[in-house]
Amino acid sequence: PRMNCGATATYLACFHGHKTIYLYGFDNQTTNPSINNNVYAGTEFYAPKDENQGDAHWIENMSRIFKTYNDVDFVRVVQSGMEEEMPDQWRWFRNFRQLKLWDFIREADI
Image (cartoon, rainbow, N blue to C red):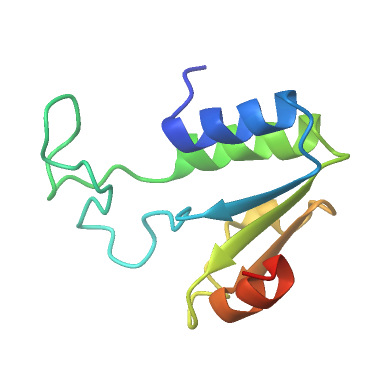
């Protein structure tokens, strides 16, 4: 199956031995399904801004990475109010968790 940019970057970080990977900007398409929220939407080689891309393919790519690299801690950084917006199949991975932005800043000491 083809990979998208986020999943490819995550895979490469795993492949190169990183044991904690912060997923920043992995906000999915759940807040408004009628809008393509990709920053490149509407540009060459990307779908239009008003075309719903859906998340199924992207969610499956990330799930496969979480399962394959079960010794890596994946931390998705989310904005306040988005804590509940997690794909159902990700809830069961022991190596996946979400952090609010300010908790990420404290944890990463930046």
